[in-house]
Image (tube, rainbow, N blue to C red; front, side, top):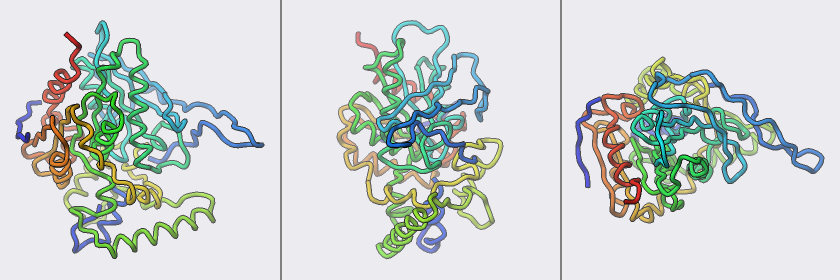
Length: 371
């Protein structure tokens, strides 16, 4: 089902394929210092200090007086220590439903995912916004590298963490993925049957856009040339003993497509800037696109059924087609909500655009306690 709602509260087109492709192989802070959880030395594993988390309120949104907040750390299946912000409704009793929240791709938990987590906690859910592996306050070396497999695993690790909390009903856990993490959320829900409901908001399928370009415009020749360049970059990185990084993200030079201007308006202004975010003037490694170009993450989207999917997208978003094709590919129960007039980044933080009431109703219905 598809419906429009009113709310109350870069690989470019073919004529700019090269410049746009470079952008998307970027677009999705200075990376924090090494936070590895282990190192090989003298033939044994040497434990390293856990990440030191910033205890000050450094979010891009105001703190709510309706919820309790604390930092947490937990490990994924690969032994990477993830850092998260746990939000809990104040004075709530009994076992509660819970939500893990991730994204956007290249963002940190102090940005959109944290806003979503805090707002949903105000509506009665225990929520966890987390930094993906290799980014933000989470561990992993080198810094600012990504893999679709590890990103999907990070969602399941967040479900692990939530399910161990004494006030969480582990049979009532859902997830929210924003932007590129919308695709990760759908992939995680397909493989992890503990996830009982999933929302993908303003979603990208990062494997599709990196392997095929925007609107699937990348030719086979362009794809082959890109893979040739990235493959040879591996030798350069091996010779140097450290990965090369792409140019700083979202630095405008003039003449960019409108959606890139909108990204900069979020990530490079006080509205959404955070120094640890890849997208706030930092960058992914040059070779980050390699696994995304080879591992499609929505192959098994139909296996989410009979658990429900809610896709939310802006009417005027350049990325709207990702949600439309995901909705067409998914099995029931599924719903696509189109937010009138909204562009892609409006659903990061615009409280008058994000349909939080719709999200809360979806999860209350599908994560309801047994009668």
